Amino acid sequence: MCGIIGYVGAKSLSKVLLTGLHRLEYRGYDSAGLCAVSDGKLGVRRVSGRVDGLEQLLKKEPVRGSLGIAHTRWATHGGPSEMNAHPHVDASGRIGLVHNGIIENHDAIRSMLKGEGVEFASETDSESLVQLIGLRYAQSGNLVESVRRSLQDVDGTYGIALVCVDEPDTLIAARRGSPLIVGVGDGEYLISSDGAAIVEHTSQAVYLNDYEMVLINKDGMEVSTIEAEPVRWNVLSTITRKISVAPDSAGATNETVRPLSLTATDGPAIWLHS
Image 1: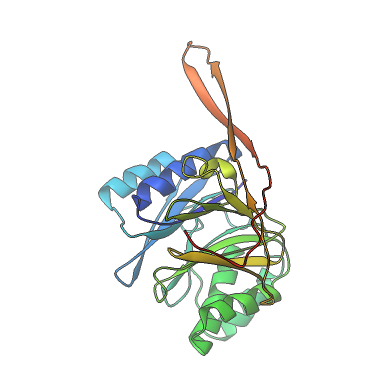
Image 2 (image 1 turned 45 degrees about the horizontal axis):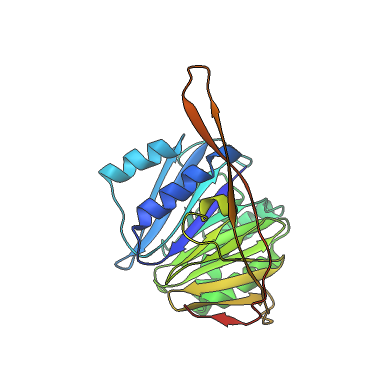
């Protein structure tokens, strides 16, 4: 299964994202990648294969910044390759997106976009979504509304995280049928498809419901529906990491991260500030 992690904060971006991806490896995957926003550009690094390979690539081609997203992919539409790995970038090179789930009407979206002159770089259904958002953003100049409109037009399931060079402090995420958790830290925020990726950084979380999206920056977060209706949410605590340790055939100890438990506490609000 695919995995998502995103980060806004002052820690080493590459370290947070790579550690999160390693925590998601137990879900299974065939490629990995990340995207950082820095100096008006997207720094995209992707590999076919293991997270260790992405880590080696980043030693040769480092990225920097305080905002980024990362992903492990299990191939569904298009084979396992660097070309099909996430994050995907729109035709302008300004928007990067990671996606879990399946866009069922991706063929129709792809055909429409090709008619508008959009060129695709992968075989994936996921790229159709970022290209749709990118086209609407180019037409309107309003990133949030472009995301909303595009999500209303897709059929299927999604858990997404998105960044844009024009809003270098903002992370947008949304879900329908694919889980997403927002981790609330000390002056930092994380987004993940699995609490295992963020438990090292915080025990406080907000669990998005279907048809909800969140805008996050270093000052706070806003949750709403994809129809732009405000949402009152609850902070969940504590995230409990469950780890089993067992010796392998050679006697070495191997740590396995298991799913996490969440306990709800009151926290109704539309904005949260650290």
